[in-house]
Image 1 (tube, rainbow, N blue to C red):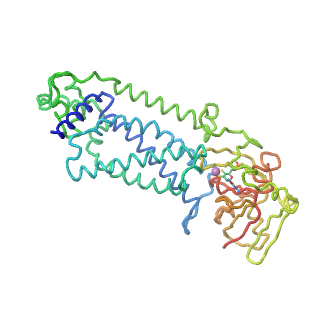
Image 2 (image 1 turned 135 degrees about the vertical axis):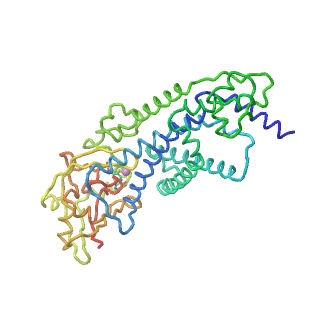
Image 3 (image 1 turned 180 degrees about the vertical axis):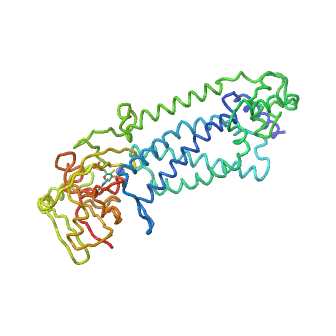
Length: 428
Ligand SMILES: Nc1nc2c(c(=O)[nH]1)N[C@H]1C(S)=C(S)[C@@H](COP(=O)(O)O)O[C@H]1N2
Ligand SMILES: [Mo]
């Protein structure tokens, strides 16, 4: 009795939520865009992860120099795009939340659990990613990067299950809604089961019911009251989603892509703003290195086993100087190219007798920061564009950008471009 009442309420709810914009065709149209965005985020995210935590055998390409800038821009832009898309997707399948019976079989239970996991992991992932771009991740009680990385596997795994389970629906609604709806909507069988109401022959309605395997049930409760009129049309709804998606991209992607800088309203970073015309990630004051970095005692210590040389800034400036155009591409979703001038890292390690492909460890004056130390593989150390930079955009390096000396190398995440260097150690 109670069960039946609950079922009636759920059915009533589903019927009242029905709209042409809701149904399997919308779910498939939005779903494949979302899947594409997820896969782009996953691929670019894994690349970024291994650049920062490489496995011992990994070697990366240093060209094109803007490769990481591009993959990072895609990661952030596709991630932001996921936000309107996931809400659109949830909207399109929302009535299924109240499907009856709630659990039809053990496989059906597993399917619903996997979807719950998928949806919640995706929402958390997108939201913490977005907060990261606004540098609010320090508020999380968990390490951002490890969590974001681990969740990505939960998402890709449950996405694979979800796609496998929904494959028949995806296949049916992949190409053309009208064809798919026409075959089911015209079915006299389903029309005879449900109440004789004009909506019952709605292609979307019948398609939805058929897809859910509950044909006819939605209207079992009907006691003469017709369900409300449908609201947004599918085309109208998809247009709204497209406009919203284009808007969030246009209003934020300027933090990664210069052509869109003018419309970058919500992106937390603006191009060209900061000392030397470049945004600052962590300031000298925040890093508490001002005294050490401006001291006349500052030296850059370069070592290779027992061989050690130390350079004052004037001595570094007396070495052959090279100019390179390289971007800072931050994992927090902004990037900008700049002109750097300084000493080749290759020349410095040569000066302490290193030969051939060697890896290097850079240490900053900064203490107690995960950015205080960075490792660099031989492919970067031996690249002519990899510098210990002393100048930025034609000016002396600003204290906030890493004065007296900082790393700049092609195609690496900003986190590895260590500022306020104190030592360069050959480690292999
Ligand atoms: N020592 C030190 N180096 C650092 C950082 C830092 O916090 N401390 N931030 C890194 C990050 S996350 C980025 S994106 C770049 C930013 O460089 P910029 O502030 O000169 O733009 O510096 C990197 N180098
Ligand atoms: Mo960064």
